[in-house]
Length: 578
Image (cartoon, rainbow, N blue to C red; front, side):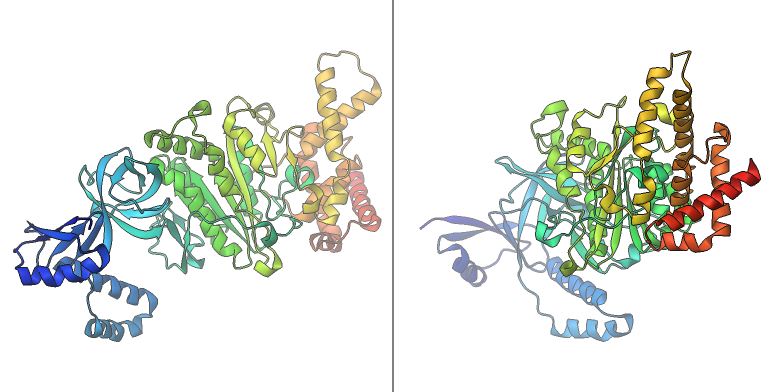
């Protein structure tokens, strides 16, 4: 018979009859070899606490009071205000306290948002642990003989070596619900915009498995950005993952914001996840969205640069769970991760503190899995699953345009295409600074409306020819007439694709611009006047042919009749203005 030693803590020593009544039920679980040793503890009042290995049975006054408090809180949350008082009274009358067992560990090391815990052999990866002072932590490493590695979601000043840690049995999650729309929350779902508490409709795990192949359907509906350079040549579909990549200060976030603004009135829910950004930048973004009426369908999840690495690490998963709530209800969701470069850096910091072995460029070996399990959760669900979708626009920052670096190549291989923003184009005034040669959408025309697909025509090929010709002719002094015409036409196309921030274009506006541009209606317009000329031309067509605009927006095919009418309006406008 194996001997098991346990300890009973209380302020007064129990007599033999009391020990007998306590140890009897415990021996049914642990065997007849269980022995209890009394330890005086004046902090345990009105009862006792038993510790056997990593398990604790608490029958103190505080423990019983906490049971009742937890039961009351649960009752209050699940019932309306007018019914809660009688229910609380009923709970008090019928309540019988229980000697619940829980596993309790001990902190052996704490610092830099990391804690090492021993005594919890059954704790699962991703489980929430409760530390001293109510600080929560998540099990991040549980394969070591030296204990569990935990990341802390709070200030670790009150935690020290020897502090007790309690298992909760719950996997890390965030509150979700319709009330989160229009709000700014932190990585744990708590509001940080001074607008009061948020009533949640549920609770989603931050790490949910991605939908299986059977639960998906093809990406075939457009997620319009309102940016002509993207919607015409690199269309994004609902359920797609399209990477926005480029150096610092090249307009990556601007593309994401314009895409959010373009969803107004289209029934799309937007989630913007800010990782490692300045708080002032996030506040300015919120102000811009509110000013333009976009916050009413947007959630901002903020893990600022001042936040600890654990919160920056968990933020994109929390935002994804909030988006999944709406996707599972059959709605279309757009989620933006800004940016995953900083997310990878935060994860690298955590991994090195947790003593995970570093690999290439000091990133741990599972950094690919870090982003793949996040981005794979984006999908266009099957009709049986409600038909909802989640479109992801991850943002990655490059150094000196190096798309072959470790993190960029990882995410390029996970996503369905990338929009590459080039510094030289940006500083030359070409905004959005989309590089036509390196950008691609692997969904392509399947994510375009029929009108847009037909209107785009040879635009991308013409631009590629222009860029190539521009390189070869920049030092030439004598050019033939056809080459000059091709260069003039190419410059005009580049000018037409310029678009100011916060001014997304509707479907019919983009089609009008494409039809007139490819018909070379801007050839005789000075390059510096093309943008203004384009905007006035679109307004003229809208005023004189509103029926055409309505048909295009409703998804009608761009027939020869519609094309001819657009060109006829354009000719009338050109004749009147040239």
